[in-house]
Length: 157
Image 1 (cartoon, rainbow, N blue to C red):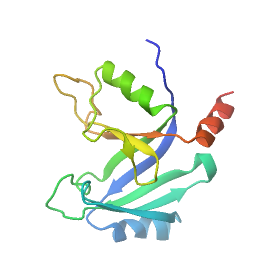
Image 2: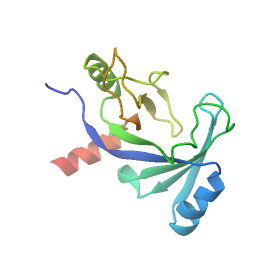
Image 3: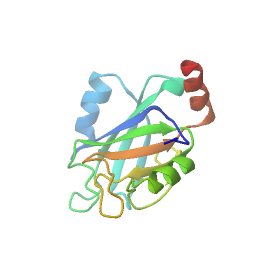
């Protein structure tokens, strides 16, 4: 089975809780991550601070998320490790190949994510039509920009 794409590395982890201020106490105040942006989406029921560790193509985001409405779904605060994001060298090819091989995607398709990269999500659970899911973990696939693809290629070389 020839895979037409590569997973390059971790792009982000997303951590949810009832209060992103409490999350910031640990991740920003205690561990020293830098807040590099914010993102709010009613559709995704999220208010998040985007933090960073590392630099350049090896920067990893830690997204600290709270729900806009704790009674609505998606419930970004009910799973403390909400999702993990993976850099992908060719997102459209990855989606096509994974779908053809039984991987279930969450609704929404490929779209712009909080950090401005094209993203999509693997569903945490498989179903009859697409039996392969994240086994309880939401997995975000993130289109790596050229400098990240090049940096990982140099490391692998």
